[in-house]
Image (tube, one colour):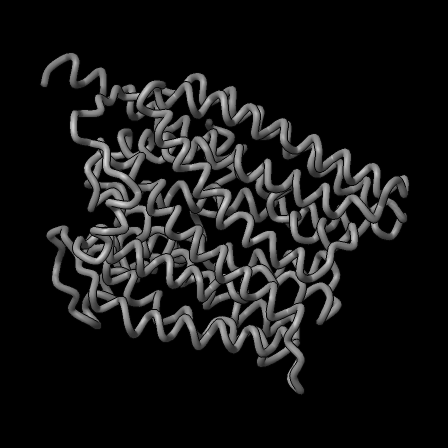
Length: 458
């Protein structure tokens, strides 16, 4: 417990600081790159069916890649896996940059949407292979007693950075569109995303990795995971999340189509509406983190799962941009912040560290199947559905109903395994929202405003 223990604690503390730095540049990549994959597909005249298939591809190829990535941990260190694959992930922006330039030059424009789909598929594969190693590695440097708060802090910072740069990118795209150089604008954004990811790669090389020894008997097959799925708490949770992702993915990939094509919003309006969700997530992230540490992750899953069904319905009730920013975006942001935080923590709580790499890959595989089937169903419906109601509107309604069925059916079958305080309604809410007589939300807003100073210190 003495000197060696203190040294390890210091290394883990330093690694957590590097994790936040790395997350900042990963967020720049997200803000300039990932946020604009669907708008880019629309800009190169990809069909609604193809855009819906983007979500389906991510859902299937991502988890399959993670299953392969989990096996790599048997022969290679987690750090080595992450470093190599993040480098290649950065390079995968090059084909997208080339496609943007070719479309601008009107070179093989009819073939470029297909090439884009292939390039995007490769990007999904490369970026997902290191996820099990990254997830396991991060879990070993963040101690259980403050896991909720630390992840909420990291999510606040990365969410703020991602949102800020995405808004900057939207103004830049509006400008290049007016100049008749929209595709060159996309090429420039994707180039910055590439550079930001390379900086993340360099930071990973400095980060401490606790040693992990995979004990005999740690391995369990995906077939075994499915066979035991309905018997264990983690298995029931994984099935719940995959079914919810199926219901969500029926409509989620089509939101960009709805906003940009059906409502004919500009890039700035589109990204502000999209990122409003992120802002609401940031504002409540610390509250959700405190909630998780105090009352457990199951209660968050319960609350957010019953918020999910109303979100797609809210999107179609009113076309006013201010309504879209302040109603569906707010509900979506609050619920997704809690759901994402609770999901990661729930896995850490229910799976031993030796099995986390495998567990997260199998869990994501099951979720990926749900996303693949849900997005595939959405793609088929948008292409072939012919009704008096606008097809995309009906798809949003179907998604909402499916989410409600999943929540009612499956949530009661999952339980909390951590020892947590009893949730006592008004008292608990008061203790969470107010700290030492001050509002947590106001405190959160102050923290967001001070991020610039925090980054300067780093």
